[in-house]
Image (cartoon, rainbow, N blue to C red; front, side):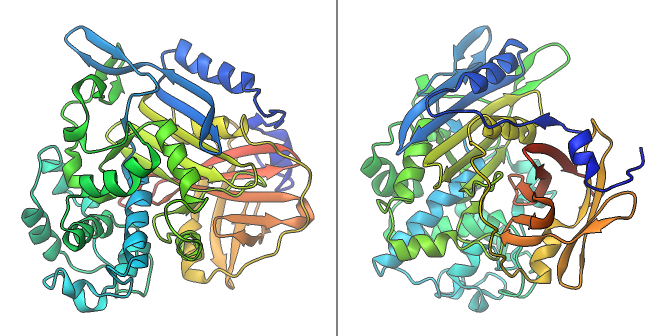
Length: 454
């Protein structure tokens, strides 16, 4: 189909229409949507919505664990692997130690791991914000061969030391799980305690998180969970699963939606780190600041993180204007996670009145290139191409017509003349996965087309 006008497709070819009629305490629309997924046997996991850390909506479905005919259903106490959402907790503990004078964010890696490539040029702050240039170990083909068995710290460090830098430290931004594994090791060295002990002492115990653990080794037997793969016949447990000791501080935590929402509320209300540290943590101008991503949805700007590990998917975020925390955890999903998440958010976050014109911010060309590529909506056939031209993001339709939206937040762009917003969703590895276009209360989701070999 050809488009006579670029934006006419937004009104004519909708993936779904979002009314944002949800009122506080009324989650019937969300419940109906999730129940349909459960009735169709398409989801295993939980969704928890909280306000001030107190759950106002909880939903669980599916199996937490299955073995030779024995099954245990998921409930509110079932901890699931949260993958990269672990990075928020790691970052908090680094900032806590910086506030206490136990370490400094400008310390170089040389003082901890002198054999790492260009260790003298890589600072702790580079690890936190993914500007170290260190290769992402989980993207290496070798990782696939041994991810299911634990490698000890010496083995991991020896492997990391063999990597070549992908860019000069501090010059670019590239998501790397290697950064956060090293941060975990640094925390252990500075404190003389295991990461699991630090997590318990600094976060879980002070906040009363009863079902948050570091690796499966610490999870009691009656709370163990697994992830599931949907086959043509039925769900089957994923075996073997990744050894979470290898993910360490980059993705080794298991938790529940309720615990995660308590954590998010505490983080943004001064219970874990000071105001200055928090502002440093959420200053996401470079895309990935200190373990936190911006999670914009329509006029709501949130902060949180995604996670993806084995067949686990997670999304944890705090939306300050709405005053709510949201945790979506799945250990089995026969549907695209970004589409489920989009539907969940659309049934929780109210549209509200039209806001005043947003104040634009400046994003340099290197940061803008994070969003470039082709995006496609299967239902409508709508395809867009995003490039950078003259220091601006350029969004072009198949008819050649283009717009140049201005950035109003790091992952949120706006064209005020058309009352249209473009927001980007990220996958668990920090790459852009989808584009959401919102116009006059309507919404369309386009998936980013993967480039072979990328």
